Image 1 (cartoon, helix red, strand yellow):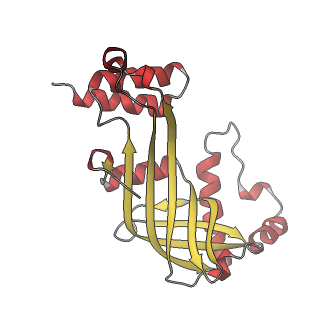
Image 2: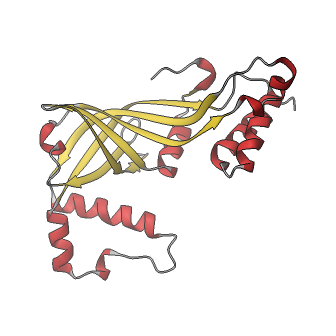
Length: 213
């Protein structure tokens, strides 16, 4: 990924936070059958290993777990948010007419080594933790014990676990940092008015950080 210095985000704690907030990642592999991409919810154990460990599961019918070997390098892409930016939102455009459209976004690339975990205890733990995390906001959170045990056992038999030990994290926050503060603010406010709060708020935070204290 091309990362100009102005857009680079290298703080591990920030990148971990972005993964936790946006856990649906794209797993990119290059196995025996060539390039492949699978879209999966991930669990991050930020306190394990040097840069953290990602855990997920796939359907047993998905060939990816047999297409790669333990130790193969993989890439997981976490795209948190994105937004089109119109030149009309920059105050400087109306004065100088020297702006063009662009696209702002925040993304994390997690590189690592994969291990296949075809183990019932492992996948049960992954499913239980993912369920507990993502059901937490429900009025009556569903839990695995709500379903008959033989049904859950059959469902777990139909999936295979994946573990990725992260070896490198690359982050990019493209929020108009190469623009003047009024232009960042103008685009950020325009996005907020359109309901695109994640990038809009991030741009306004970036603008505020640039102002003299």
